[in-house]
Image (cartoon, rainbow, N blue to C red; front, top):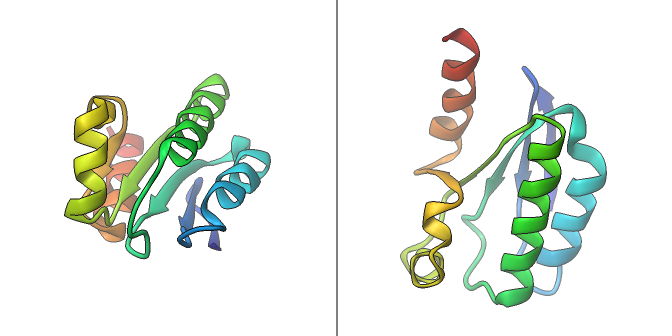
Length: 110
């Protein structure tokens, strides 16, 4: 995963596919309490229960620190897993990185 730093209180993580995915999420959990997080899924071809569990844990961690998580760049194949598990109702999702970053900016200006 590449972390593209923190800009305006938002950290962007570009996720890598297995076997790195769960490790990337765990690393973000250690870095993220000071920033909201956008996760770019464009390189992710599939997710499994371990991945979903790590995402839920990261979301809970961020919310406990009054921070937010937004996912973006999710392929239709991966999105179908979110829908089938009901997690499409839990996570905030944007089409792409610019839209995800802009959503945080819009919240701050509101």
